[in-house]
Image (tube, rainbow, N blue to C red; front, side, top):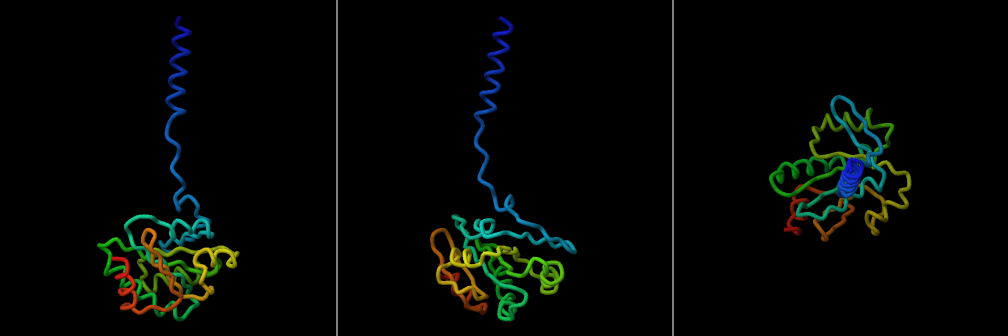
Length: 178
């Protein structure tokens, strides 16, 4: 009898443990390609598939995803406008993500010092995917690949613009999503 009770107990325990919910889908954090850290700043690197969660959120937040690089003068000129926007809308559901297209070998020597020098507080991630012919079209079929380029999206509403923005132009784009 003890053996039967022990067997039933083990069966029930196994059944309870094996019926737990399936693990949640991986978050962007779990698909980081690499991390670069210098002077307390960490840049996470993603290939296109790892970047996709930054481009496909389905909540009430307006996401502004800007593609830029430290070697792109128009990008550098508009970055303060994105930072000003992030500060102005910090208590609202607006998130600015800056996607750097810098080369991974220059992250510690150029990108991180640039972030420090310009006191960038928005999230900066690195897109490190060599197959630009594939991912550029996936980001937007009209994109020539030139930067700066910016996606504004909220749930199903999406706008892609390949241009340099003033602060006033950024605010105007946000108004389309209210």
